[in-house]
Image (tube, rainbow, N blue to C red):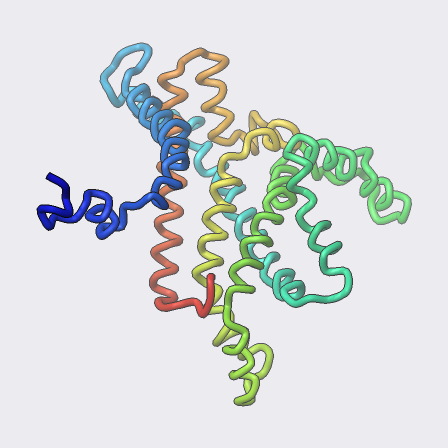
Length: 298
């Protein structure tokens, strides 16, 4: 007997009442992609980290990492690179986004120039930094010709070279995200404040910044995650055995040079834990700073 004859709605109607319809199937490829390329590798690496190659119990790899000062220090080295890089990118993105949020002549060209580092990649960016900031680079030659320096400035193969690389490659993402959040804020809010006599600084401080703060928190988190996973820059323009011995280098060496995949997985899990802790702290700070709508898609 049909569903109509019994008075009972068809299955697809009952599912539609619960929000399950054909449109929801569009999310299925994304879910499959997430499971295959993120969830499964993460869970596999997590269980592998509890299977130490040389025995000693399930937590032997983690004890080995945190008991070794050289390994443990890689966390702080990476944080000293990732946090300043994310802050610089976020702070620099705000005025640039404000300056380019409204149409003007040459805006499209300027935006293209600002996001062009995305197309370069970390390796090409590192090569460019070696050419510009190296001991025989253009900057040191200009400074020497002007009589400003006697010896070349050490701007690469150290902390500053890696930080410069992270800023160059990370700024386009911060700028595009900030611009997206900024253009999503209802412009009538700022116009109303200006009508009531608020100056430019007061409009920014009391209207725009609180509305933009949630978006800036997300931008910082994404910039931080990108910077914390630094690897090529630390090798090419840094000091991989000293000042820029970041945690990703140690994970790579454990897995692919020492062939201890279990230890490499444990170090990768430590990386994920640190990143998650920072993201939770930032998002918690965001909820304390501002609660409410952003006035737009931001």
